Length: 286
Image (tube, rainbow, N blue to C red; front, side, top):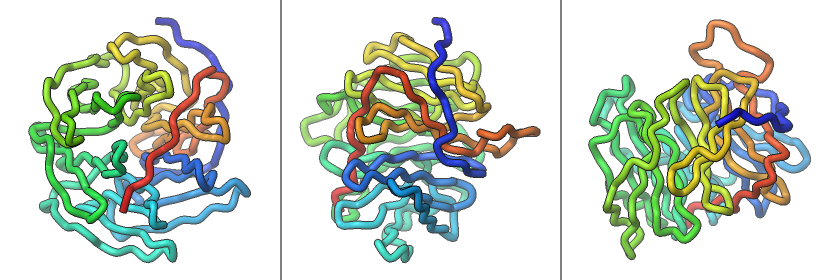
């Protein structure tokens, strides 16, 4: 599959060590993202004004809450960032040597988050679900680095990337929204780079950021590579559709571990001209 050229620009200049978790909030027209290692949550409004909250630990993701503020997946579990930017620990559950990583909300507004061992020890990763009352259950274990996650357009298929294994997995979702069965490898992306964060567009295709591979890959729901888009960064980490028409793909990037960095490394990119639209990001129901 040839790599296509589209309009790629720096949407927001940043110096993120490990930028992750882009989220476009359609109601407020705000784009937010995290810097995992810096513990920072940044958001930018339509007027270009930035706000930033720094947590005293790593933060894998931060998703807006229906009641205001954010739910954050942190080094120990889950925290709440209030509208006044106060950070409140809500659930501490992870042992020392682990941290939460990527996260996203299901159609019911529950947060799904992956945890990993700090050195990515095989079999020590898991996926946890937080409901609107901040109750947590673990739904998957025996992973290594659970990363990008998402749902099919009908909500009946759950997608999960295990980065170290270079696998995009698919599961059938039970009627209760929690149960996962019939795990299968949708695609194995073990070429240049590792699959990292992802999003699902309005047609049901998966867009995956290839860490170390300076590109995005678009997969069909059946696992076929439909398209590759080259990026001017070494470490794209995740992506999310945004903009008033949901036709701009925002991509977070990372500077950590690079011997030399370019202008775009660590910044937020905007990819235009894909002729594809995304779906509105889901807020946490709590």
